[in-house]
Length: 287
Image (cartoon, rainbow, N blue to C red):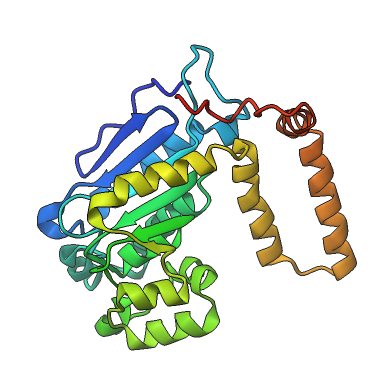
């Protein structure tokens, strides 16, 4: 498969590809990009499609036709808001669903959030307006979040008498225990300033300069080996889940380092450093 393969047909999420960058945009602005079952399924399909075409997963920069594999993914919401969480109709239907049906809905959501969190590309969220409930879950799963000064974020599930359980692991990993617990209980909107303070977002960006900031960040990411980007997530997950001894952990990191140094990318990185040249994954400045 190549990056020029036809992606899945969608109506609520758009996908455009610019070189090695994939752009996903939620396209229900009249509903504040609230997620219904159809949008969730489309996001899952597009995340899987782009993951299969990532340079990190394919372990090469280009396909057989010379087209670049994907290295970054940018997630946006069309209109004034990023994502208002779950669609009200989906929430209403949940009350009439059987336990088995609600479990299936939760499994679908988990597949979405885990697919974004574990995506082999470097993922960037460009956020404006509100990111509520599942919308907060989406940004928690991204590697870098930039937001405008008017953004409002909430783990709003508590206002409905439920909790952010499905998105919980991803929000917890981003914020830590104390902030996650407080926001889950508080369930109210926080400002961009507080979101920056507690680590929900990485920077506050003026709307007029979002594209420039994405370009700056992407340029920096492209100077990193694509497999290194992908495997950084595996390394982090290993630390998150580690239950062995300290000595076992140290040995695991030694094995991890040896594997990377012996890889084609590791050899190219070390050779380029010694030869005082740019590695083959770094674009030319005039590209």
